Length: 205
Image 1 (spheres, rainbow, N blue to C red):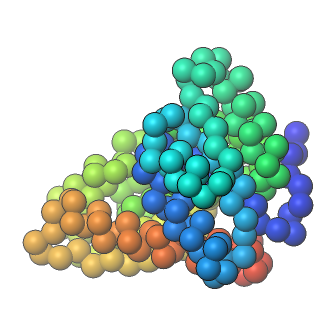
Image 2: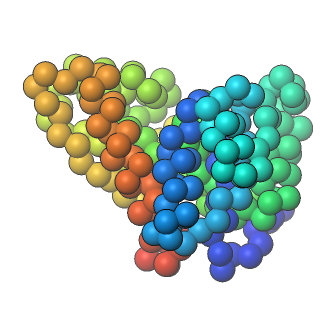
């Protein structure tokens, strides 16, 4: 079923498992007016995540939905869809969500589901390529340039259509941690820019 409504406005639903700094960057851009969108709701599979605390501080409705609250996969997916639809969400943002999203959720929102990956896809993507694993692989491969990629989410890890990328140069003395910190800063810039282009119709999804 198609649960999208009010497509004239970008109403964002967030999926996050940990700190939620990308979610915060998007909320801040909305408050500044550089992103013409509305933060709709957060779903987290971690009840004590930093993202949940950020949502509370920003008065964004938040929901803990996990295998603990909903052991049945079908009920789990339906709970996510219901939480977002109750808040008129029409675009989903993965902001460090450590669980593969099932196709039923993607389909419910007409494929309007975005993720940000901390490397220049299609390199260093796929199952297991998350967090420090990505940056360790980039450095081990001797790459000179890395950076975040915003892409659509489909049924395969990191295979959806690429919407935008930003370059971050890899320094000779970089560790995975120092590279990760600089790429995260770039993520905070790139995600709101891409969303604004979607809001303006420059990028079509």
